[in-house]
Amino acid sequence: MMRLALLAAVLAMPTPALAHAFLERASPPVGSELAQPPHQLTLTFTERIEPLFSTIELRAANGATVPLGKPHLAADDRQLLVDLPVLQAGEYTVVWHVTSVDTHKTEGSFRFTVR
Image 1 (cartoon, rainbow, N blue to C red):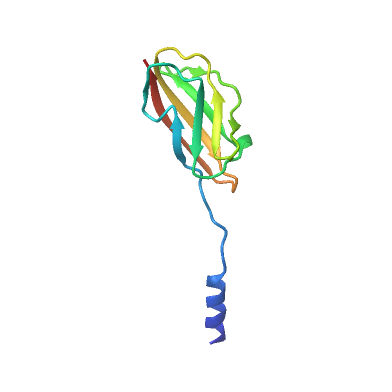
Image 2: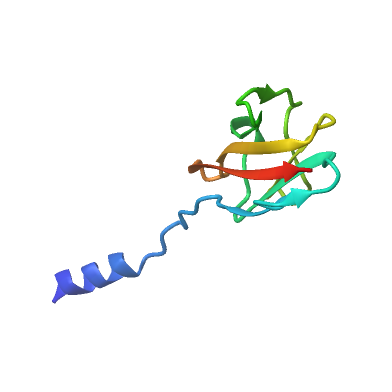
């Protein structure tokens, strides 16, 4: 009986939430076609992220990497922002790698087009 009570107590103990920072939304939006080139790229995640271990890469249609500055966080620690140079017409691929504040890593990519 004592073992059963001990097992129940251990199972009832709270455990830390293990979360991953998934892309919730982006600006420009995923798969969008834009009449004007964007000035900034904003990625919003489901969890707070650690900027020191998070990156954003932008690739042109020919695969060339578009030079970007260092991404920075917005006030809520869930948005990663980076200023963009003037983009020419064409398709672009955003490749992101983030680490949430609880050290879980996620990555992904999406495209948008400037007409």
